[in-house]
Structures are given as structure tokens and as C-alpha cells.
Amino acid sequence: MKQLIQTACAALLLLAATFIQAQETWSLERCVLYAQDANLTVQQAKANVKVGLLAEKQAKAARYPNISANTSFGEQFGRTIDPTTNQFVNTNVGINRLSIDASIPVFSGGQIHHNVKQSAWNARAAEADAEQSANTLALQVAQAYLNILLTEEQLESAQRRVEQSQRQLNVTQKLIEAGTVPAADRFNILAQIAREEQAVVAAQNAVDLAYLGLKQLMQLEPDYDLRIERPQFEIPADVNPENYNLPAVYADALDTQPNIKAADFRIKSAEEGIAIAKSAYFPSLFLFGSLTSNYSSQQRDFQSGTYLRDELSEPVDLLIDGSTEVTIQQVIKVYDYPRTPYFTQIDQNFGQGFGLQLQIPIYQNGSTRLNVERARLGVINARLQQNQVQQQLKNDIQTAIANARSARKQLDAAQKTFDAMQAAFNNTDKRHSLGAINALELTTAKTNLDTAENDLIVARYDYLFKLKILDFYQGKELRLK
Image (cartoon, rainbow, N blue to C red; front, side):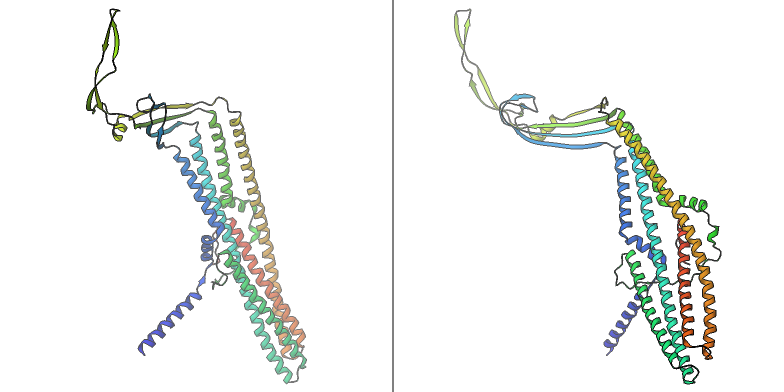
């Protein structure tokens, strides 16, 4: 029994933990950070940053020596040169060559220096591109977040309208029973309830689609139980879009927008490209050195021979005084000379060398001049791209200011319309309660009020998002509180 109780308690705790986890809410800041970590476009931009940093390291590494070790093995046949004695031999020779070579650039016309600077500008441009991708995604997430808040508020409004219509149905039923209004008025209220219940279903579908849009931006699975916070926020009363002016917002955007910085960095990179192209006009000077050694299978150790025997040489006939013929033979001592050991040869044949190598360009088929011209065109293109980015930014800010002003006017108009429709509905509702008007007039007034309320909700969130776009161009953090 005790074990059963413990098992039941553990199960209840697990269910409670699961319920708490399922009800965990996400703030806008958390959604933005998660999306920036998971979004594939942002991840690709971050990978490009790493590529740029590696290119910068590689450019800096060109200043250091280049050292390589080499070895070769082989067999020579016929009349060849023994690499250890540099003499011709007519036998098979097994050879092995070892070497360590090093070279370091002394002067290359400034090519390495400008390569380093160009790669650094490219890396900074890639970082700015990654930041721009993250900022654009943050704005998209904020829009999706606000869209969820909008649809949820519309859903609550639709549910409230159903409840209100249910109360009106009860009042109408009492009036029918009292004989104040005809029984047909009940059917008008029921039709109104059916339309509003349909509106609730449509609003719930809109909420589901809004959540799906946010999940897609965050790379979450469609069935993930995502719930967002509903912060208490008010439309800022001290913000007036009429006070925004293009020069001020544009100046802030030039200092804060990463795509503007990326365009500036690319101009500097293109300018370094001109210096890199011109470096081919100048001589290049390299310091080199090498360590070498050789092995030959035919090299003998003449200091360690072993005596074998004495042999007579072939007889040689000589004439003495032009008339006396004499035969002469020599006694030749025969020795066996062993092969010189491998490491002994490596030590004996060890050699070193160093020097300077100077490369002077004389004629290159005009390729250097064409490369310089191409680099100058690259600078022109980079500046044109910068102008395009700046002009697009200016156009976007103009549109954002105009949209914010229009959204504010739309909000004010929607608020006035809602207040008027609310007053009209309250008056109509009182008259209906007294039996002075029929249900059709009440239904019409309520429909007008519902439309005004929905327009007001949409206008509020639209105006809020338009303000957030202006904050985005001014480099402000996206917050709702």
C-alpha cells in the first residue's frame, strides 16, 4: 500500500511538472534570442563570419616562413651519376634524397600587407551582415508576436460578444414572455449568436495561424506547445509621429544599421584591392634556405676494408732500351669494402645553403594594368552599392514615418468610431430592454459596435508595430513593456 501511494505521488508530481512546463510562457526577448540561435539564415551568416575570420588569419600567416620537408626514394639503372660521388657508374644504384627547404617573403610590393587589411574589412563586413540578418529576423519575430497578441485579443472580443448576445437572448425571452416584443425577435438574436460563434471559430483559426508563423520563424515544430506572454502595455501617449522627421531618423539609422556599416566596409575592402593589384608592378624578394643529404647503395667505406688475398695483375710486356722485352706483373692486395651505413651517409653528405631570390616583373601582357583597372571598377561598384543601400534606407524610413502617422490617425478615428458606436449601442440596448425597439435594430447596433471594436483592436496593434519599426531604425531594442 505504501509503495502504491509513493508511485501515485510520483505520477502526480510528474504530471504537475509537465503541466507547468506546458504552460511556460515566452517573452518577446526570449523568442527573438531563440529565433536568432535557431534560424538557418542567421546561422549561415554567422558561418560566413567565421570564414571571413579564417581568411584574415590566412592573410596574416603569409608573413611567416614556409617550411617543407621532402624525401625521395628510387633505383637507377645503366650509366647514371651516383648522387653521393657525382661520378658515372654502370650498375644499379638505390638512392634516397632528404631535404628541408624554407622561404620567407622579404618584400612583395605590399601585397601581403594590403591582403591582411582587405581580409579584415571583409570579415567586419560579414559580421555586419550577420548582425543585419539577426536584426531583420528580430523585427519579423516582433511582428509575428504582435500578430498573436492581436488575434488573441480579437478572439477574446468575439467570445465576449457571444456571452453578451446570450444575455440579450435571456432579456428578449423575458420580454417575449411578458408580451412586450414579438416572439420572432428571438430568432433574430439566435441568428446573431450563430454568426458570432462562427466569428469565434474564425478568430481561433487566426490565433493558430499566428502561432504557426512565429514557430516557423523560430524553427520550432508545429506541434510544439508555445505560449507567449501578454505584457501589459499602453500606446505611448508622449509619442507623436508628427514630430518625427526624416533627417533625424535617417542620421540615427546611418549610425546604427549594420547594412550601412557593411557597405562602408566593402568600399574599404575594394580600395585595398587597388593596392593589391598595383603590388604586381614591384619586384618580389624572398629569403630561402635548405638542408640536404643523400644516400647511395653503392657508396663504400674505404676506411674499413677487410684484407682478402693477394692477386697478380695481368702481365705487361715492356721494351727496355728499345730492344729488350721484359714481362712485368704486380702483386695486388684485394680488400672487401663494406657499404657505408645509411645514417653515416646522411651525416657525411649533409649540406646547407641559403640565399636571396629576386623576381622582377618586366612584361606581363598587360595583365597587371588590367587588374588595377578592374580593382578601380570594384571600388566604383562598391560605392554605387553603398548609395543604393543608403537610398533604400531613406525610402524605408520615409515609408515608416508616413505609415506611423497614418496609423495614428487611423487609431484616433477608430477610437472615436468605437466610442460613438458604444454610446449608440448602450442607448439601443436600454430601449430594447423597455420594448421600445425590436431585436433587428438591436442586432444592427451590436454589429456596428462589433465592427468598430475589431477595427479599434487592429488599429492599436498596427500603430504599435509601426512605432516599433521606427524604434528599429533608431537602433532601439525591441520591447513591449
